[in-house]
Length: 498
Image 1 (spheres, helix red, strand yellow):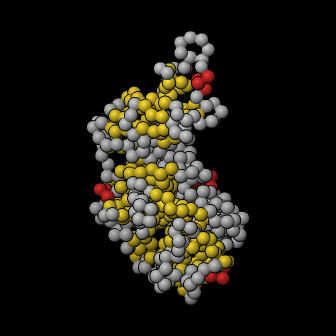
Image 2: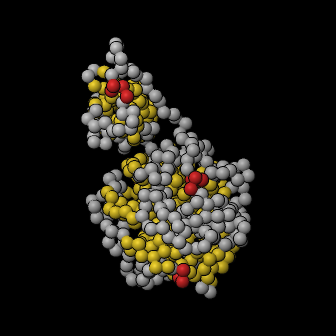
Image 3: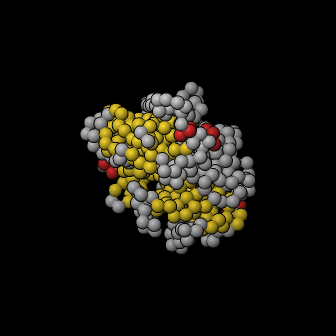
């Protein structure tokens, strides 16, 4: 399943390669310095409103032809097209061979091109490189910060609570960032790392592959002790998956400890939801269906005895559960193969109430339920019946039963991968992957059955997941940029939400 999520498409705007001197100085053999290699490490293909500064500086690294980084090299920067000002005309590489420059757009809109070149002794050394940027009209969705994540298959879900972002950084492990909590002085525009943890190989024998998490605030005990972490291993739609649930004790946020795990034979976990009042963790388990776990009291060791229920709503051959959400006494399930389901706790287990086999033309992805409506995305990594996953579906919950209302097409998008409504039900977030219009989308929910677009922003490489967070009186989205260029991205969407 891992390769299914990797982005293959980028924005239609291509990289530019700026020509330049070959560094031979006009006579005699080329100097040894011509072996210098200059590469981009950040900031390319950004968009920002005219008259504003780019949120991410343009960054490069200098190395020799053997890949050895070059310290103390001079990089010359210049605007070769469009209206922009640079923070400096030259900069010097640090001990990692890296250097950067901030960019301020002029008032106009259009493409901006910036060139970087190693320049020493009046000579351009090696081949210059270019950055292509876009100055746009002001948008209610603003990229505020971009935090690079190690390219160790990158970043998947992010869970934000109490000003802390729990980042599932795949093989790098689970990371905790202060984005407004105060424990490290971080903010949405300046996340500060708190701690990290790579759980040990569990019963599935997989290390890493950290996909999602949930920080449990226990209303019965008042504790904020446990963090549930999901692991997504290899798999195939409709037939197989791998991965376990781990429990970390985060009583000390600076030093998480692994204390328990849960294994479901023949299946791997995906997304979580918690009925915190009842102290029950629900987990989508792909071909394993849905799992309900009792997580009350002290947790340690093997949690197999805590299993309350395991249900495959689509039956043994048509179940591949992506997401779950407990809402108003029912558990709603989005199943890639068999669509949207409604289940309910019954006699210590889970009973199927309604739904299913209601999205036959596409793979179903994430879901969100608010009030009397539900929203589901569609996945298009492998087209189903020839259809891409470029549709948001809305549902009316009539006495809890889901009735389809609308299908909203996102042109030039391949997958609507994550869906979330604000807690007040005013706005809906979609993250989009694949295609020229991949990125972040915000819709208003004045008419909850027919969302209206309020803002969007294209993001190179696309966004796999996103989540709302209200911090300091403003509304943000924390999103995961895809593994080909992984980053935790923060968007200020205050102006897009009524």
